Structure formats: structure tokens, C-alpha cells
Length: 160
Image (cartoon, rainbow, N blue to C red; front, side):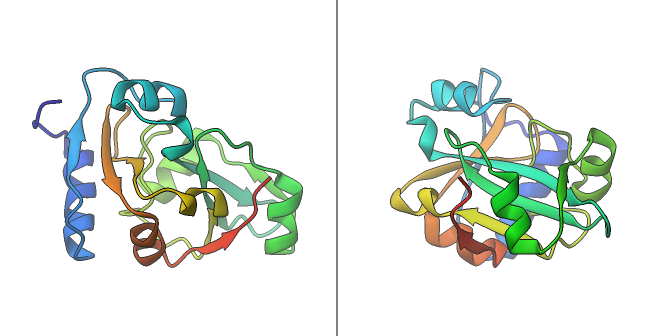
């Protein structure tokens, strides 16, 4: 892991600092584009990977951020019950417009636009140590479950 950060990773580091968190963005030698790639590169369980997934509501086009454990699949029906509207997976352009980041490197914080609908997978909170993307497919940062709650003000839910 080396320390030269891309501009988008630097912006995540700045967002972490602004939130008062001592989390440090690190560059991996291998891609962390998928949860399994990230877990392999870091040497942790895939369940400790925080997947930042962007959906949007079908009628109102509001962004929905789901922070899911790396091994879990999101039940769109369950999320729809929380937002009282159908949702759809956001396309790359919508993700970039809302977050400022490309799919594969979306962090849980530091987005270009404010996201009000944030849901945190309850399974993430069983771990003392979590890893989240930091703006690029090969940058991550380590955090605790309580940090995830504090930095996002997300709602802890069952997603599966």
C-alpha cells in the first residue's frame, strides 16, 4: 500500500478530516472494484467491506444510498418499503452527478450532492473493523461501525 492519492481520494480524506475522523485513505496495489477484490487485497472477510450502492426512486428521482455488507445482496422490495416508492439501480451518469465518483470507488461520504435517503446494512455493525471505498477502485479506508453511523446519519436496516 503506497500513499500517493488521486484527486478523488484526496477529497474523501478531506471529508473524513472534516467529520473529525482519524480514518486514513490508503492505496491498494490491487483493484478493489468489487467487494471480493477489496477483501482479497486487504486481507479481511468480504462481510467487512462496505459496498456503497446508489439507487434512485422511480417517480421522484431521489438518490438512495445503501451501505451494504460485501457479501449481502440488496432486496429492492425491502428498500422500497422504507422509502415508500419503487427504486431502480442508478446508471453511471446519475451516480457521477450525485456523488462525484465513478461506480467502483463510491465512498460512504464526501458526495457532491447531499443524499437524504441513506440505509446501513445491520450486518455491518457486527464488526469492529470495516473497509470502505475512498473515491477510486483501488483506494479504501478503515473505520468502525459507529463511525459509519456518525459520518452518514444513515438508518440501520435489514437489506436482505
